[in-house]
Length: 425
Image (cartoon, rainbow, N blue to C red; front, side, top):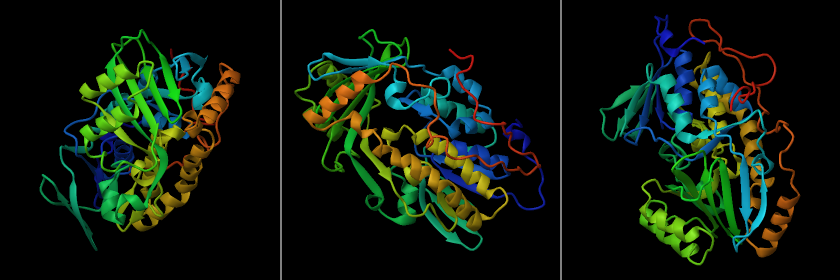
């Protein structure tokens, strides 16, 4: 595959300039493909640097072909976690079932990748940093669109003008708010809140997850390998989003402490570790449903446009696929028709994956004693390892091929996406 830095060349028409807000997953992925079709790309990120480490995420189905075409699949294979066991515990700490994670998560052995979020972020950054301008510790303050472009005011940097602006700034997107208004009108709350953080691995866990459940509450310890730390996870049902807690880490800690105050198993120690954790992440389990993904010269991608929630396991994969589809739609079009094509060819795939929340994801966290018993009965009857079958929702979209400014098509593969675990550990 031609490295992005070989795309610099003179063109008969001025190079289009794009600004992307967000340097997580969708943003750098979009930057990679926009560079491939000849854009000059700037990424602005409010954090002072890339976030390292992080909780595990999945790359599945069509998204595997995206990372293969980017040339980062070998690196992600090396970072594959290979989780081997998922154990469910009852409220009293007794074991309910212990099985292969794919039996519950919908993963397919030999096809899917699971990596730390930071490992994917690092791979995307490495693939773009030489040809993309990254502005850390800054953000967009205002957008002023006109006939010839869009003027951008930054919180720290000097004003600049771009041809297009892309919001890849997550579930609580500031770009979406500037474009379409308050988040509440697009926020579909799914009835739960969650928190993740790291804590010392004093439990002897390796390549496994242990999950404790009581009605409306869950706690889990996730060990990605032979490491000193584990990922701690707390999830609880809540009648409405606790908006007052979202901007306030101390309010988050207080809410979690109250909800889990009488919980057993390892939860008291988890709460103690949470109070000192410097990487606590707290949010609602929700989706974003926006009637349209663009307006004028601005378009949304990833969670900013369609956050599916972690219950689907498809947030990262949709971000990667959406970034590819957006760039492909702009390869030979200007923004009005390009944005229309992007939405026309991508929305059905997004809708299908968002609908996965109604097909068993939320049943992992029952809110009643009866629901919990029914779930446990199902877990006891699951086979240890499911058949390696592809899921229609994960692979429902066939990637188009598009040609960059030098006439080089993005590489394609005959047949189905490659098997990322072939030859891997």
